[in-house]
Image 1: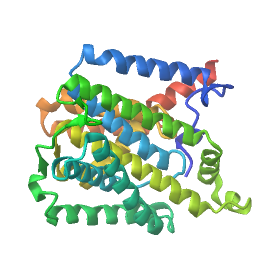
Image 2 (image 1 turned 90 degrees about the horizontal axis):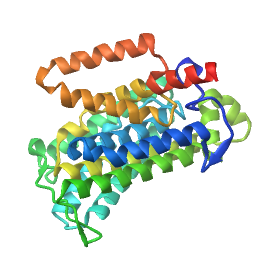
Image 3 (image 1 turned 30 degrees about the vertical axis):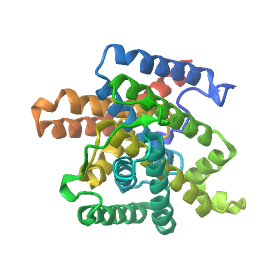
Image 4 (image 1 turned 60 degrees about the vertical axis):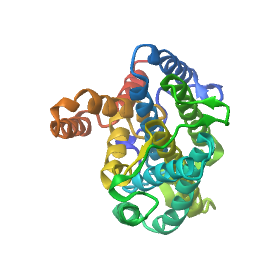
Length: 328
């Protein structure tokens, strides 16, 4: 499945790589993003910003699968939610430090991704999407019944603890810098992945899988590795979110969470490295500042989704990239 409108996956006009796989335009965009992350806590509520960063990492992980491999998963909430549950359980019950708890969340996401992906990648299109959704619902009902998840109450009062056993994370601003560091590391990991030879093969599979197979690539193996990487990063995002907010609930593993991450990726721009970040920022900002409208927030999100599909098929970043390519 190619990216909407034939968008090849490069955010802007093709340029020569200048630093760590970034083109000049992408490097400028990355530096701007880092600058915004650095100054934002001095103007906005850090907890809100941490939520944006957690979901931005989640959306980037999802985009790695759909934007660069062409696999539409409707079950990414399973990895995000289970990562949050296991990270919360590890921090609260097992007494692990936050960085170990988050790594456990990522490991659980990767393990789930390996099992589910091994089965799902044997199918394509809507069949692949439905298999991932079915497994995600199985994970959801497991979380409803399992003792360690707390059922409908979730895992509450998860301690932030001390980073490396030394740096206390009780202060929001300290926790913010840790969350920002996790996001940036995840973002750079995804960027390096998609601009590596491995990433080139993934893009070739997205564009023409039979041709990639004819060239000797074992496409199922590549898709499985991409699936596991995406699930792992989703687990990390869920893990850091549970540490930030001190709670892991069924909301994070419910199917609507999978729908939200699809919406974030579409609004920002599929197959673009910065698109999911922008999409997550837009959706979370709407949820936060339009909360007073209650259920109407969902209606407003639906309207925006329809407008994006009809008028901005490449998403926000995709349309900006297309505009720059035409005029530069």
